Image (cartoon, rainbow, N blue to C red):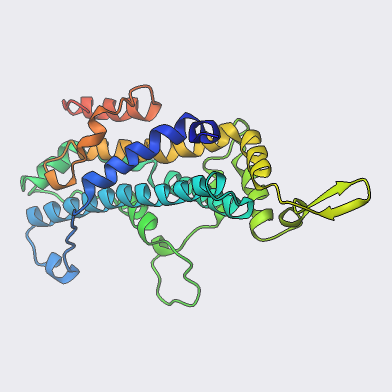
Length: 289
């Protein structure tokens, strides 16, 4: 069975785009200034460094999500096709789902937030913003949370942005009646944790009662995929769309090392978020993308 049949068109489209993003970004380095050095800079220099580092974190987040998405997706494909393994497939699909929920919760607002301040950001990057300090605490917090949030139990003096939310909190941001993410997640968890569903598929009911027979990994995988076909496509779209829009926004700023040329040909114009971003650039007399 083909990848497209299993994962829908999303499984054909987004891995290629994300692979191209990783290829374009390979070798990119990010330099972050020590806080003590930052404090002694002039106002114009602080604005420049602050927004450079915001864009660094944004680029880093988009690339990191691309790699993580691809690793989970590749594992799903392997355990659904060449090495069929129902338990491993459920574990990797759950990872792909949680990854999509994470980027949606933390980064969905990032491209629009950057676009809203695009004119000021360009001035800051050019060293022209010298009369007032322009920062975005919400944008900064979202990026730091995505890149640094973790289980902080046992750690002392941990910034709030470093504390991971519950899986329920992340998943709620993408769950709906049309795409029952929570229902699918619950089913996957019962297989992975494990619960009874991790065992019941291992036996079959025959004429003489229950018996241990050949495990039907492929049949169980296909059954799961067919029941949640639209939801599985949806989580791939979430991850891909946010990543692409972030990269397209970054292409508008005078920092060539952060440009991702491969996304210039991606037509995202039908997305509501794309329309909002374009409106913000237009408000500042800027063409985008």
